Every structure is written in structure tokens, then in C-alpha cells.
Length: 299
Image (cartoon, one colour):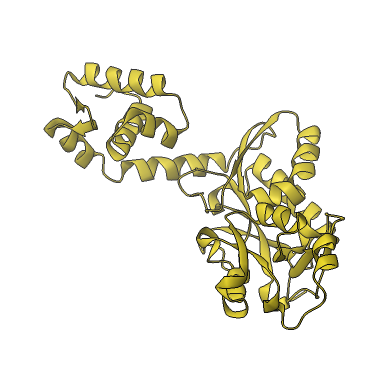
């Protein structure tokens, strides 16, 4: 047991948690064959079967359950140690895993990532786009660039600006529909239930009757495109809508719907050379882009 690689134990724990090789591979960011090989090597060295291979997946044997109990808490300690050691890394090389949203990639991040990579060719950028905060504690990502008015307390970072939201319509839609009062008399493109946490979704729920909803979309980028095609009005991000010549701002942005933009990382990683270089670069570029982001509140 003393000659066993700790990564083998990490594979063992991941298979136990996921219940399958493919699930463990996704969790660890490796391929299926690597998980299979490491698990087989661990069982061979320990001369014991740790999992029963069942049609429904991998189920721990009694030996596997005993090993899992012995390893309880060890994985977290190893991850913490790795984050600490990374904090001593002064090289501008390696991988930076960045989590953000498709909205930011469409409106902001593309040029920032390209320019940073041109300055630091020894750094590989891995970008994960979704609407969830990946765990920076478990190293699912190193840096988060996200819109939120309530960033996680365990992360550190800086506010880079505010996303503004306003009502937009296409020129073609307005040409066919004379000005009406109230806004509820128009057709609307709305966020679907997957975006129900957004403030603009709550505003629409209060201001627009369900019968006036022409379409619901699970993406702010998608909402912008449907409003552009004339399906109705939309409460859109100014960052996206102002880039479309066909769209017209129907009324000024509503400050109550503003969302802060944060550049965040884990405290143990903030002094890693490549992480610090990227967060400083991204923050400076975001703050300078006043045509897209409003200044952070309180400035």
C-alpha cells in the first residue's frame, strides 16, 4: 500500500462517488481508459476486488467500503495541499481553467482570452461555459468570471463592472406595432424556468401576463436573437442588445436589475503567477470596457 500513487486512490473515490468509469472520468477530467487502468492497477496491488461490475454500474464491495472509510477526509487534505503548493508556483506556464457564461463569451471574453494568450504563449486556457458556479475549492476551475450580486464567501476577487438590462425590440417589430401603453400590451420573449433566478425574469413575471409571452428561452444570447427576429419585446442585457443594429432600446436601463460582474479565484491560488497574471489582465480589460460594462456601484 505504501507504493500506491495517491492518484489511484483519487480514481477509486471518484468511481465510488459516480458509480461508473465514465462518470469518474468526467469528474477527474481524464479519459475512460485512464480510470480503468488506474483502478485495475490499484486492485492488483492490493490483491482485492474493490468494486462489483454490475449492469447498472460499479458497486463497492465490503473491501471497497472499508477503504473508502479509511480514506475519508484524505482527498480534501490532498486538494488543500496541492492548492497551497500551487501558491508557490511563480512560472507563467501551465493551465488556467476558467469558468464563465455563454453570455460573457459572446460579448466580452473572446478578445480578452485571445490577447492574454498572445502575451503568454506558455499558458493553456481551458474555458468551461455554463450558468453554474463550478467549485474552485475542488479545482473544477481556477478562475470564475461571472455576473452575480452575491459571490460565494469562500472566494476572493474584484468587481469589474455592472451588467445593465433594458427593454429592447426590433425595428421591424416596432414598425408593425404602434406605441402602446402599458408595455404589457406587446408580445414578449422571456427567460424560461432555467433562468427564473434572474431579476429580469422576476420583473417580467410581475409586469407581463403569461398570455403575452411569445417565446421562452433558456439562454440570454438566444433571447436576444429571437427579439432581433421580431417575436416581441425582451428585457435584454445591454451588452448583447447594443451590438445588434436591428435592435432598439425602448426605455432606459433599469438600475434595480443591474448585476455585478466579478473576477474570482480561490484564496490559495490568488498568488500563483499565471492565475494572478490572468485575473489582473482580465480585471483591467473589463474595467476599461465602459462601452459594455457600467462602472461598479459604489465607485
